[in-house]
Every structure is written in structure tokens, then in C-alpha cells.
Image (cartoon, rainbow, N blue to C red; front, side, top):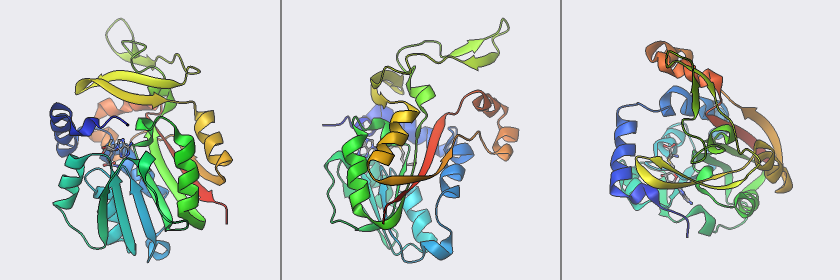
Length: 250
Ligand SMILES: C[S@@+](CC[C@H](N)C(=O)[O-])C[C@H]1O[C@@H](n2cnc3c(N)ncnc32)[C@H](O)[C@@H]1O
């Protein structure tokens, strides 16, 4: 059974506050980059979409507002889904299930998105094969995940940043990259489990599952956010997230 850390009260409160205060990198970096890989509204019209790890459903609602024909949001967390359901939005439906246990008919979706969730999945191979099956021929799988240069060191190297004599961050420390597998670290609470795999493993797993890789992004924050929050300039020293758009073979 995968860990369901978002239903831990202390974790949920911390994450909810981070999102409410816009203090993380979601709006400053993650969402603009992910959205840049999604189809234009003209192509999105009528599409059947699945969002894996939909959380509070922001992306589901955004896709519905741009013309998606149906959107299914899936999440392991009851509390995140309760938050999502509080902003009910046709044609969005939510299902409470770990991604690893989900099952759909072949070719059920034209677009599958997943935002900052796949680093919680222990084995992406069966999930990527399922996603390929759930997509119609030529359908698109677009996702973001914590970048392997960040997951590599979690729970292994502290502090993770290299600082100069004045305490200014000058580099990100990378280590243990080839040692794939579980990482246990502290984020709002101790014992948060994520999984590290190399960039090569992520991309080759897609290729082995029948996908063609269409685009890969390793962006820094948008410049407007960097101007408002200069600490975001540090993210130019390492890519915090990895983004991939892949197409299912027809
Ligand atoms: C960082 S949040 C991102 C939420 C949303 N995608 C967004 O960007 O706002 C990660 C989400 O993944 C969900 N999650 C973690 N492991 C999961 C799993 N194995 N199956 C389905 N959802 C999972 C969590 O409950 C949480 O809602």
C-alpha cells in the first residue's frame, strides 16, 4: 500500500498553508511549465482527461474551463479530494484510489496529466504501461515530478545546498544519483516517503512503455515570480522539477 501522507493532519495543514500562501513553487514555476505542455484550447475541446494525483483539483478545473469534454481527478488522499469536491465543477469527477490500483478500459482518455505525484510511486513501470493502455492512439501523457537531482539526495545529504563563507547558497549538492529507490525525508513531518530514479530511467521507462517523448523541460521560475521573490533565483542552480510530454503510439 503506498504511503498516504496527505491525510496526515500535520502534513495536510502544512501543505494547505503553503498552497494558500503561494509560498511554494507551484504558481511560480510548476504550473506555468506544465500548462505550456498541454494542448491549446482548440485541441483540448471535448477531450477526455485523467489527472493522476489531482490533489485539490485546480488542474482539473483549469482543464474543464478550457473545454475538456470530461475530466477525472484521481487521488490517494481523502482530504485532498474533499477539498477538490468543495469546488464542484462540471464536467469534473473525482475518484479516491491509489494510482497503482486504478483500472480503466483501454483508450478511455485522450490526455493524461500528473502534477508532482509520480515521485510518490514506487514502481513507475506498470503505471506507465497502464497509462499507455488507457490513452487513445496518439494521446498525450504530460507530467511533472521532483527532479532526480533533488530526489537523489533526500535523506542522504544534509545540508543539501553548498554555501559560501557568508551563508549564501552557491551550489546544489548532488550525490547518490545511481542509487535508485526509497528516500525518507522530512517535509512538514518526518517520514515522508518518495522514490528516486534517474532521468534515464524515467525517459527509458516511457520509451519501453510505448511512448514517443515529445518534449522535456527543466525550467527555472517565471521571471515575474523571480522579481517578486528573489530567493527563487537559487532555483537556476538546479532544476527542481522535471517535465515531460509524451505521445502514445497510435
Ligand atoms: C504535491 S501534491 C500535487 C497535487 C496536484 N497535482 C497539484 O499540483 O496541485 C501530490 C498529490 O499526489 C497524491 N498522491 C500521492 N501518492 C499517490 C498515489 N500513489 N496515487 C494517487 N495519488 C497520490 C497526494 O495525495 C497529493 O494530492
